[in-house]
Image 1 (cartoon, rainbow, N blue to C red):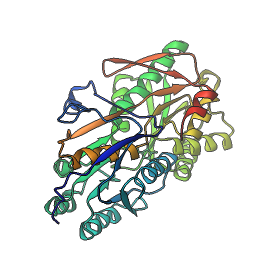
Image 2 (tube, rainbow, N blue to C red; image 1 turned 90 degrees about the horizontal axis):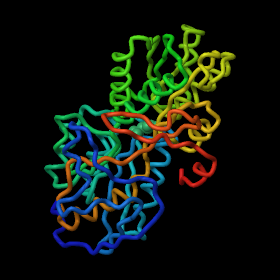
Image 3 (cartoon, rainbow, N blue to C red; image 1 turned 90 degrees about the vertical axis):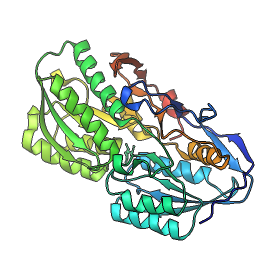
Length: 370
Ligand code: GYE
């Protein structure tokens, strides 16, 4: 397909959003500058309205497995409206890798102007992404990543630093135990996300690093909850049956798994909470979706490490820059927070940097859009 050479007129209009672009401090992330060639950063929450022709955008969606995903999909639907100058085609892969590959090929056949690409798993993308490149269709990766071999096939990528998220969660646990003077061994179970997804890989790697540095933390069991409430519950029921009172903490790789784990904990007659010395099971979670934060407010989730889902406006800005001929960095990260209702720790250290732990309040939850 021949790319339109005419530069569209683009205007920015503001809508509320909670994400910011930032530079990552870690060496591995050095290429992520958060800036375009012209030095302009993406602006949080602003939709770039396309005032030229209607741009056709194909969204290779993962599914609807979690609260996070629903917020992400909503943000994209709200930003890519006809009114804003876009025609959005959505292909829902229902968590199936093969369906995503098929979707990429269908969008190529339909000669869309851009592909919004959110891969379920990191591997297996060489062929279809190469076909998109050959067809001259820019592929904008976001949220999860692809593995090294296929990396160049995306025109640009924006998403979370999942390893940093995991490191922040583990740093919180370390600091929390220290603040309570807890020195005994700690029986941990781990509910992983969808195996092979970037979110799972980064968050799992961070826990592995922490386990290596803490011989007193004992990993009792590890199973995938596929980022869903139902599977999260199922595996927690199994873990409770297998390890019972030995379980003192559960590291859930997203909020939905935490919802399921909490239900299982209660049904087993245990209490989800931070007081492990009294037999409660401390729950760690990621995402900070509304229900996750409500559970965090009551301490049922001890700490919730945020993962920002509102990509719609950012992706419109990326398209507007590409339409303007701008060259974008290969990777950019969104900035994310960490929440707890507990007083301590108020800050944690991860990747050689300090991060505040935001003290959660009802007002804060109400002020958020998802
Ligand atoms: O944490 C989880 C979801 O890829 C960041 O996928 C996303 C993860 C998110 O289903 O809830």
